[in-house]
Each structure stands twice: as structure tokens, then as C-alpha cells.
Image (cartoon, rainbow, N blue to C red; front, side):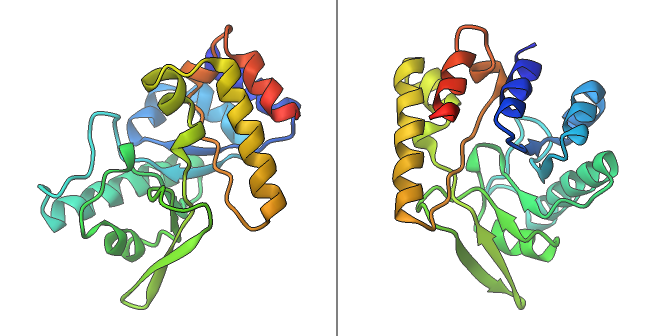
Length: 196
């Protein structure tokens, strides 16, 4: 229910979502995938499961296979090969950017170290654009892990967007998890932040 409540909230403001889609989700929630496809969502590959991450303990071949399987599952489910990668919990190895570029990805959202896009590489002639996420207003980071109250979270979103917009050129990546922000006692704060 929180997922659909969250989508309705984004619809109200004309927001087209970018969705980090794990390959395990594809077969489990066809109704969610249909709703997202109807909204022309942009899909990023997101590994397979929340409990399976890229680590430096993987061999290069294992990591390549993991990335390829995630990419191919999203392509099969959505009809389009994803150009973006969003790693589970931002986990990577030293090889990940080069492997993502080799797999045809054009961007990643795994480097929260700036508020402007920048290039990684080149890797065999291919650069990888990084679109930085901001954990400071990620609903999971704020409300779930740090126990920031929903009103304070909403104020942070509105203030950050206003500042970055006035500064010009920054990336505003609002990461939402419907099982957090879409809950009945939190959704109004997301709507409030988006309406400012």
C-alpha cells in the first residue's frame, strides 16, 4: 500500500520516478512494475536482492556476471536496457566503475561525495557519469537509521532543493523507499516538502 500511496504522491506533483530495480523484484511484483511502466519510469539496475552486494571478495568474473544479470533482468522486464546503475548500499569493488562502463552503463548513483555530476574514467574509452545521491535527505538514512522526525526531514528536503536550485547546476537526488516515506503517518511530509 505504501508503494502505491507514494506513487500517487509523486503523480500529484508531476514527478516521473527513477527506479532502482533489483532483478529479484521483477518476478515478484508484476503489478508494481506495471504501475511504474505506465508512469514512464526510468529504470536503473540494482543488483538482485538487498542482501546481495558487490564486494572486493568477488572475482572480476563473478562481479561481471552479477552486473550483467542485473542489467539483463531489467531489460527483459521493461523492454529497455537500463543506462543507469544504483548499487545496493553503494557497495563496489575497485573494478566496479570499469565493469559498469564495459557493460554499457552510462551513469551510476553510487558516489555521494559531491552535489554536481562528474565523470569517472575513461575505462577503455568509455566514461561513466556519476549522479551523486545525497544521504542527508534519503528517507532510509534519515528516518529509519538516524531517527530524524518526518517534519525535520521534510524541512531538510525543501531547504536543500531551494539552495541547490538557486546555486544552479547541482543534482538533487531524493531517494525514497515507499515502505518508509509512503507510510500513512509520513506521506504528508513528503507532499509538504514537494509542494514548497
